[in-house]
Length: 105
Ligand SMILES: [Zn+2]
Image (tube, rainbow, N blue to C red; front, side, top):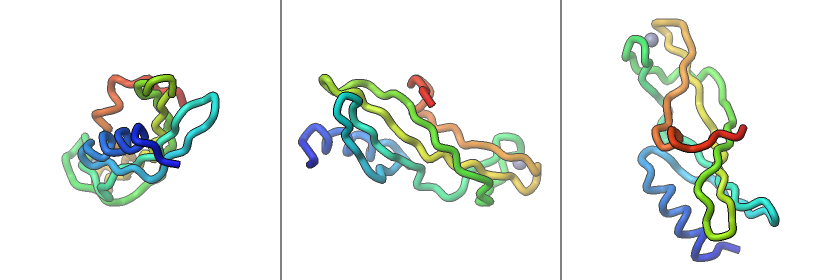
């Protein structure tokens, strides 16, 4: 069941540039977990500035978002790690909205 509150969160999340919500689950006694991932299939290497779309691997990360009423909100992020073909080094694009959030996993 999707409540008005859920829709509000999902809409707010969708307002984040380059982020899409995949699914959301509500767990009794835990809170709401929203699965999100970046829309972009490419990213810019922080070392050389070259665009890379060579996917290295995926990392799952869970961060604690602000609570919604009595519900704690968690964001499960599918972080894509890219590998720059020029530097031959992997890098993970920085998700700016995560900066001030507490990473729990
Ligand atoms: Zn590079």
